[in-house]
Image: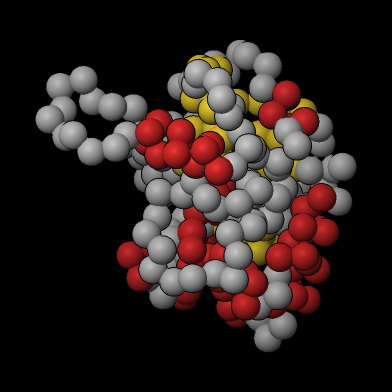
Amino acid sequence: MSRNLLLVSTSTTHGTGYLEHCEEEMKQLFESKTTVLFIPFARPGGISHSAYTAKGKEAFARIGIELKGIHEFNDPVAAVQQAEAMFIGGGNTFLLLRQLYAQQLIKPIQERVLKGMPYMGTSAGTNVAGRTIGTTNDMPIVFPKTFDALQLVPFNLNPHYQDPEPDSTHMGETRETRIQEFHVHNTQPVVGLREGSMLQVKGDKMKLLGPLSARVFLQGQKPQEFKPSHDVNFLLDSV
């Protein structure tokens, strides 16, 4: 398996511009590539595909790469099959997955990525790289045909993972509580990616990048903290 993935928690961290915090990792992922295919289906805030692509184009221009929106092509399947590399941006994960199925892009993306085409996701684009979208934070504003996602990695992800604020008066459920609820009905691990964190997957090896640890949830076990220096390759062996 020739995976080459960069799964980023968020596109923007506090005090940085769009994709600035992961710019060096992007340069490594897309090294020698001249164009990247962008899938803007998640539409954060209801932004149009064209406006979202324009925003992405500015960020990719900083590293000398042309970004092309998949909506600009007459044949989206052919666009995936011919792409040098791919970026799926954040927004609403339910809408994103519904559109991927509606345009029959799941299998073409899987085939290309598992054969080595570089893939970058942020937020919703990271969510759909996992086994299912069952651990997204998004509202189900539309209904995809299934929660089964691209399955580029054999676990689920929870981008934007937040720890409880010690002084908060909020009495609602925490992210950890929600993931525990998920594990009553599902067996796959869940990786909580804090802001500024990302997973780099090359073949059968994976690294946690960024300044923070990740919180890993295994069914029936206490959550574990993994720092960027720790070995997280066992997650790729999940069944």
